[in-house]
Image (cartoon, rainbow, N blue to C red):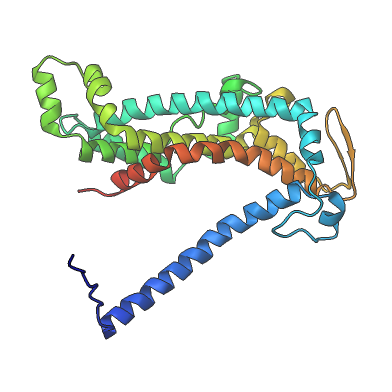
Length: 301
């Protein structure tokens, strides 16, 4: 048998320079990754630590005196579970409605034979930089009788011009005009083309935009803070978390459970984890589509 000897490349100045640049890049990426991961680990450690250790500021990255008492208090309070239910229903409905509107708007704007598509695209782009403001929006919701209803959390933000432009660019770059024309010659309508050709070929961008809509709605609380006043049963989880975080009193009162503590940091941390874990569980399943969709939608050939 003939042994193959590995040929080592000489350490030229160019190779040393490339290695140094790679080490610097890896170091910077490691620092950025740690700034994202370490706070999450810190909050998780606080959420399962004994309260006395948290009050003494002895919990950093590893939990001290592990306990699930804070999570038991959360699950024993029906108001937080109700807020979780509201957030799930609103997020799912909001994402489905937003995707339908965005797809139906992006497809015609991506066709070059649409008259006035440049003006329409500019109108959508204009809304990204200028808006009416919070007060006109509140007055509009009041006149439409949407305050303290489910739809006030769904309809106002169900369309994003930014997501529309990303999907429009993807349709223009990834869907060939000749493919659309051949389908039209065969007698296919635009709805048939959209359902049988465009959507199946655009799974990465669809997953990406769906993630944008879902995460954006799940993390939003400002609109609920303004629009949900009387009907407290419609408060989403993030708004419930907001009221918890801003609470400065030494005693925090849940709706059905009285929690007396010198420092509510443990309960705050457990609520943060309770609101964050659902999104973290969903993201790994669409990560590959998210990366592909972002690249396709951002780079124009």
